[in-house]
Image 1 (tube, rainbow, N blue to C red):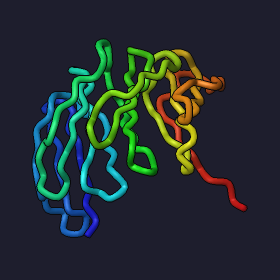
Image 2: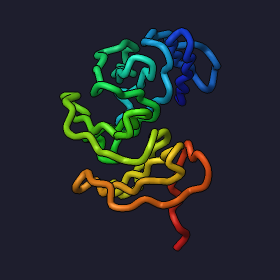
Image 3: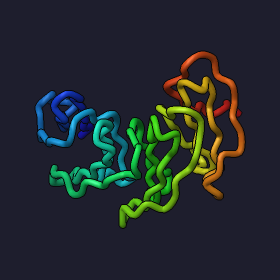
Length: 172
């Protein structure tokens, strides 16, 4: 059964909706402005940032509940969350902080903070898990981060105010 998650930013509502029956399976509350969601590869846990308060919420998918609320580094305004393809790390773009937080997906400990361009919004991880790409709105570029070292290795000019980025595999 396919399940969708819907976020409502003003009230901090997270809805778990069955995609085949359109029934609400669960309604959870987090702090305001939940911006995105991503899941462990096995689908057991989801991660939802709350932008206005600088938090990352860990959601139990099987038994819908907020398991933990993690306070991100000072100045964080989390926008986009991505789980590494191997499920071992969680990456959160921190908007106005100009950083991406790296957390352990099991202990939820902050492992690293990666400095990227101005106000990173959308982030994506390459399918092989080697690189993270961050769309940096006001700096009009995309950061390329080597996830082996957690260091920005390049910035690519990307027009005016990029807010999202995606990776499309090349055809063989």
